Amino acid sequence: MSRNRDIASFLGKTEAANTDNSRLGRVNELDSNLVTSIVDSAYIILRDRVRDSSFITTIIDSSYVTARASSFDSAAAVALIDSSYVRLRESPAAAGTDSAATINIIEDELSTFSVGDLVGADGNPGDTLISDGDGTATFTSLGGRAVEFKVTYVDNGAGTASVIDSVQALPAGFTLDSQGDTSLIISQNLGRSVKDVTFNRYVSGTLKLKRSDSADLVTYLVADRLNKFTLRAGTVTTGADSAQYSYVNMIF
Image (tube, rainbow, N blue to C red; front, side, top):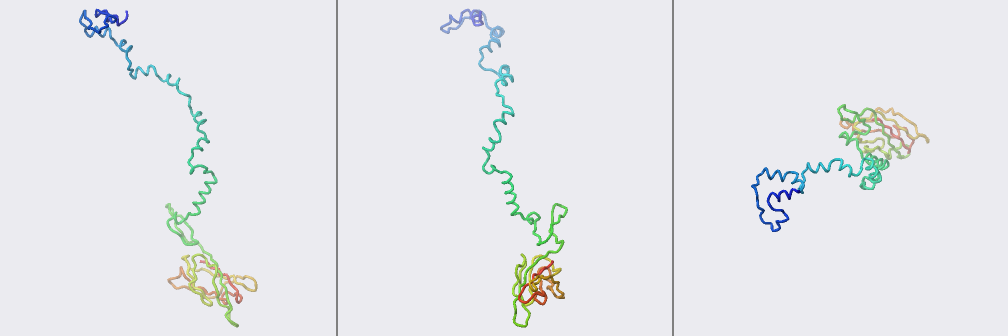
């Protein structure tokens, strides 16, 4: 006999006979012990439509999930997301940055790179950058700086020596302040005084080196010693032929 019939028999009527939903008569009083003996947890679970987590996990456990999960491991991922897949989704800026493109980028950076930006100050031409031992560096003058420029001459009339006509190819940072017949006043930005002067002068179709024996070949004002000098460079000093030229070689 079913549980429903048990309850109906106990109440004195069957569920089938109670078609008008009339109040069922009670033979005995119902107490809690009697009810729980009939309507127990098994009775409720059989008719329950709400399931708690414990009930769900007894049905849907890890084995249940694993059996229904697709097999997608690292090998499967690599097979789908390969280098071609990545390239198709690269941004235009990042695409095609191969070794040639990388070299072009580096060369562009180097073309505008300034050591002064790195150490915080520009040195003088010819200076050497020396580490200070604390992560910084300083430009220092360790040795001589050689420069060269050309002096041309023009005849100044019969029986007289040629005079200076022009000064050509002055180095960067050098400025011709004034020019006389036999001397030049030149400003320079090396921050050094002149140490030596020689001349490669034109003589009979040949350039010949000469070291001048003039005692006053180079002179300075005291305040201008490191940035301006007066140089004797006429043909008497250089030994060049009349109306020719001489290369001036200077060491600072």
